[in-house]
Amino acid sequence: MKPVQLVVVGSIGLDTIETPHAKKNEILGGSVSYACASASFFVPTGMVGVVGTDFPEPCVDVYRHFGINLDGLQKCHGKTFRWSGIYEQDMNNRRTLATELNVLETFMPELPDDYTRAPFLFLANIAPQLQLHVLSQVKSPKFVAADTMDLWINIAPNPLRDVIAAVDLLTLNESEARLLAGEKNLVRAAKKILEWGPKYVIIKKGEHGAMLFSENDVFVVPAYPLEQVFDPTGAGDTFAGGLMGALSEWGHVNEAALCKAMGYGSVVASFGVEDFSLGRLQKLSRTEINHRFAAFKRLTHFDAVEVR
Ligand code: AMP
Image (cartoon, protein in one colour):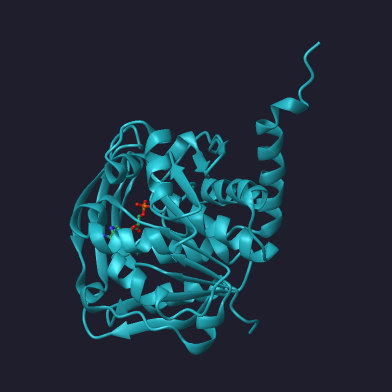
């Protein structure tokens, strides 16, 4: 197996999801599942996560299908993390119905030795204390990104601030950015978060795309327009996984690389929402990603359109 270039830590869950199209019980989910699957189209990716003894073997086969390195996957006595949510007709609105931490409650992520030297690290959504524990094990990574959610902003603000101070990039969605910064305006919210340490902040806006903020610049990408979205669960993790995968493939990070990587993240996420769980990503090829990326470039590149 090729050496792992990107390590991702996050949650592994069995999700029960209801959308206006269908209801699915206990399907494979969790931030690290989506992020690793997405990144695996670009680079050898290592997963750090925990499952319980009830975790179905076919779900491990799904990870193997993507070629994800599973040396950092722990199996602990107890039940796998479970989450359930319901989407309204307007799928930008989702309500969490239940969260059962189960084995996530006592999880201590331990990185296999070769993961500690990986140049890229993505701390996907999980308790910030665990993100810090992973950070303490890595040896001078080139680039570290973190994601979070409203729950941690509310119940673990101090460890979360330590995470934010230690990473190069923070990704979060627009309501989380407002909550974290205590600021309604997104530009001002991003500026405030940048002052806390990271060089870059990406605010994800669901079907309205994403915005990248750095000290002196703002860059905006739309979401790839789709006729039908089946399940937006994990879109943000898929976006971030694709973005980190593309950066890891190129091996270096600057503002231009980040902008382009956001394009790849958006494209992989646009495939991900075409089915539940990792269903669509399992059938996806790098060629399809490249084709949609080319189409995405055409539809966003308005300075190439000549006005006569
Ligand atoms: P997103 O749609 O980006 O919010 O991600 C959805 C995924 O996050 C689902 O697959 C859930 O299993 C997972 N998830 C939900 N709540 C939590 C939590 N408190 N900590 C970690 N992961 C979670």
